Image 1 (cartoon, one colour):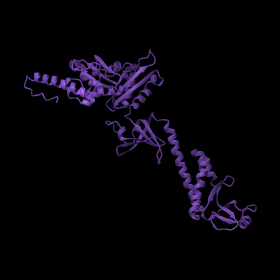
Image 2: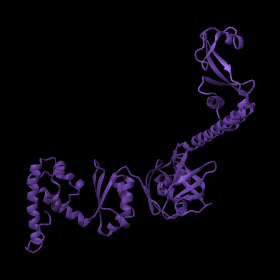
Image 3: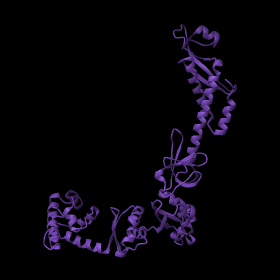
Image 4: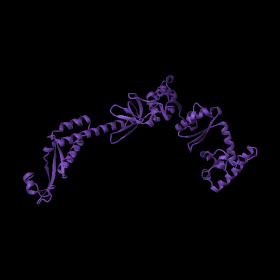
Length: 426
């Protein structure tokens, strides 16, 4: 075999592969190749640092009488040819003449080195990017495969899946692109880098880039919710009473928030002030709508927001977008109702409270299961109602029967006494 010491040194130096790991891999590969040629014998390979060669040895046991010529050697031959001091039971490493299969050995060595170089490069890429998860990455669009965008990052490629793309955006080969490095997955082909432009963290990182106060920790982003490509809300707070968190994020004449919106191709961004009070936080989150008051159920992270009639559509937003984003931002359930609806619910709540056997404290949990009116109570699932009220099912059935009679009487009165809608609650 030719001297491969120089090749080993070069690979170790240029690719950063551990020398012992590379040598061990070469030794094992050559033993495998030798077994293919010589059969299933006890073979070992050892790298000789001085000669720069890998020598292969066949190990045989010294015996008095040979029974298996592949694993045993008699004492006389062993002493005459290999070790004059050997004794019965010794293991002798007998050099294998590999001169007639040096070409195979060279091929094996080449394959092992190529494989180890690839593994090392994959490990280097994985190590480089695993610590960059959550960062904004810049790249160039290579191609589109089944809706997924392949992005060249220089040393490797990343994938921007269709599910992580903003629907209103489109890219062509050669376009520059920025995205959040969402995942780094180890696979047999090498690390797979997953990008995202829809994740809320992407918006946070863009603001961190544009707003020095965020990078310095003076202003903190407490939450972010998005409808990618359409609208986003971020909640911010200041750790310095002299710094306005909203103003810092908006920038002079809106320059900072505008830069983020341009990167997101016009996605509208509401910057609101975070507040430790859930009611005030909800009020800020529903901006620009004005709210009258809020009924807070802290245990269930649920809130009923009461707004003036002329603010109802603004608070809810087009297709419910405003309240949906506010709820997502707070991670609370928000129910938006008008002042008139609130008065109706209060009137209905009084009716429910007047039912025989009802306790004012027990009805507080009814809104959790969407029971707001006498009719809702009368037609509710009895088991569910019993669980919320903490009462026996038989008792609840009696109260529901009483509620049904009152509700039916109201329906008859409302329809002029003809009873045409009397069965609506049954």
